[in-house]
Image (cartoon, rainbow, N blue to C red; front, top):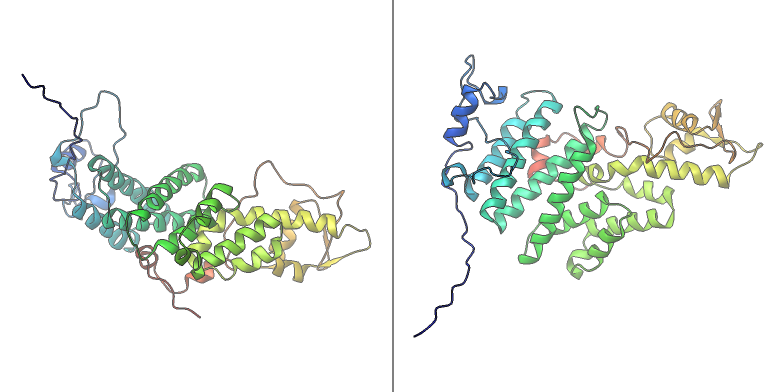
Length: 349
């Protein structure tokens, strides 16, 4: 008598849905009047099958697994991402906040289908790269919005998840954009020992690219407390990399003011506001004066007086980073957001 040994084998589920949205979901959302305005036929309250995109469905205990007819295969997922970028992000269909809310949800649904089907390889990398470019651009464009419009913490969770998934996918093959995204991860996580250590272990041909060398320089300047040199180096970053580091700019400026308040502390010492504006990489002297006054520093007649006893920080936590034409905005040039999300970089100066 022989004994048979059974081994458990993971069965990979491959979806059969050929459209951007399964028919069942589209019909159900139409009945429940849950179609987004980007998805309806012109002049009619009916779904447009060519524009309806599967929405994200939160997993729940006891919920039945999606049918194969409700899962989009890799090819369809990539087509869906291209549609979202070209027709929604690049289509001038509404205000940025509305575009972000819609595309954020639909890209999340794409990643959900990828996870269920265990999709990997080039298509996964391409989708994650485009998703990250969109999320990083949005984090800058919506940086002044209220939390009900743009939740910074929620955005950060998804950016970090995408970075983790993407950087974990790179060792499986050769990908042309790896250096770009390894640098973006270092800049987005400025000051993180974990992110810096990961980057130091990368192959030499990745570490020695211009993107990576500049990211390493900025991270070193930040760690050493050389905030003037840190802000100066930020001026050389391309647009998307500037979006990635943008959330840290407020912190860098605040720390520079703290250092100057100690180093130049004197009742008789005045510092020219014009020079300080340049060092802080702010867009105007008025903006620099306002920042100094928020920190308790005396500003008068185009000068600021640094005094250690007067310096204060306006609130707990890092200083929020508002829009910056000097460090971010002007670098977009005439390029469309859809072009940037697709990965088309500006020509070198």
